[in-house]
Image 1 (spheres, protein in one colour):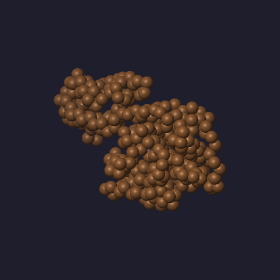
Image 2: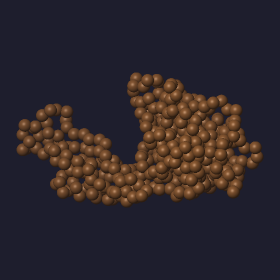
Image 3: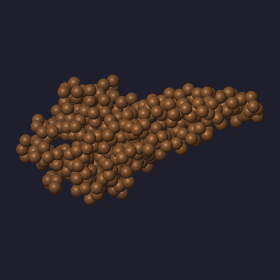
Image 4: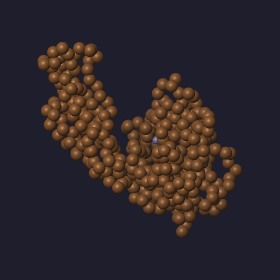
Length: 389
Ligand SMILES: [Zn+2]
């Protein structure tokens, strides 16, 4: 299946990505990204619905009256750049150098978002009769912060309109080593633990009159990092335990600290629950005789999507463009797919290599952005043919 030839300027996805990167959309600030996209969708004939909640701008855009509803779930916000001086080029002043597009959001996800928009535009330009599918864009303005108002508010909006999704393509960066190697068909859950171990402050020269919470905790914390928390299964990799923050001490060299504060994060499949993690950590701390306070909180539940036609179409479209069969995975971090998956028939996540996402000098290969556009366009063509058949 070859995409029809259109007379668009080359690399329209790169041009769009550069325009979007120029909008410094670090949530809750939008920086003009949502308005830019709303205007573009309107120009393309979409019905555009702003879904602005608590100062966060989100957009639902839809075109077509017949056939399955295919939705791209994207986000317009990016993470902060950090120290601008660390960047080779300013993070919000994109540039193409040595075949790479540089800028904050190039990979996550203004590049892939642009690939999806241009794929849809090219697909629409190829239609010379009634559109065989309905196409939507869920554009969240608040995906990166922990408190998510974006996709969840958009889903609430769709439910209030009785709009149900057939297929959803989430454009997060899912490729691991090379473009096209991985499609996500679910995600692991995430549990955060907040631990405070109580000791007794004292003089470093007189440890017999103090109780050092760092010394008391070291062995047991090490055991937690080494432990096999859950073996995983055919759908999910083994659970991972990481200490993410640790603080103790007054700053003085001769004072035994009174307290040790530890934060940890557990990534897990359905075989491990919040209650199990909380219970096991308490058991280990009790066995070591520690005085402590512990709170464990789940911030994402694991999920696995139904695999059907959309997964197959995604695999075929990648094979056609990249010449490689992707593997199906639930590894890596969380994404907004977990909010959309319960409300659509089938969902996949596919995007670029994400190794520079959230990094200084975030970048993507221009060739891969062009290929991603072709994959998304191939998916739309296949869905419309399947819908007619
Ligand atoms: Zn993202």
